[in-house]
Length: 250
View 1 (cartoon, helix red, strand yellow):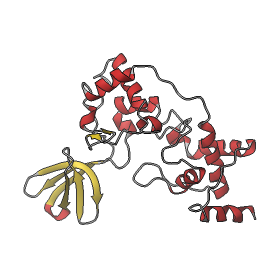
View 2: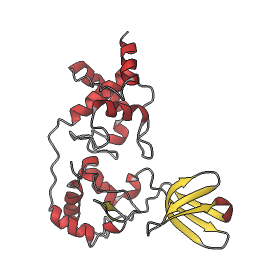
View 3: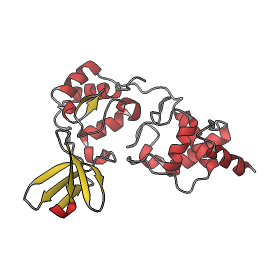
């Protein structure tokens, strides 16, 4: 009977909001499930390679219903996969545990965000590839909300070891055409006959695979260079302070 009710809840998720259970037993079960299914990417919630969960406002999941839906089906175009082997009740318990993480004390960071912005715009050259508030390049992920999505430790890893913190949907592709021309860019779309790339100037080119002699995909290598030796310790701290302050209108 209970499972039937839960199934009806999910069937009506578009019209009514479900609430994740917050009782002690449910949170304990949710934590166990989280550690098995989620901790590999999210760590303890704010120290993994995936989105920061230790925040009261999850960018992609403002409600319990939307959070449960993300657990169920993942987020297309990202590294967030759908849940496997969890019942509806277990997904609700995981959602409740994730919500409980947002009740933790907010993370504070050292550093001067204003100096960090100057480094971002100047020495780092970050705006050439990344956009903040509609301003910047399109060769890397939009960073407008990055502070609400990533923890300080994750941001540091992304800067120092970008290959270890690759974001889904940003595969760099190099195409060599029969004419000898070489075209490189971020893969936007691909089927059996065509591949579309966005180049460093933001222009999208659609190429016929029949016209190509070679197509190389950098599936394990980020197009972003490692900056670990570019910035001093103080500059890195300030840059992370700036990135962590980026939370859009939230």
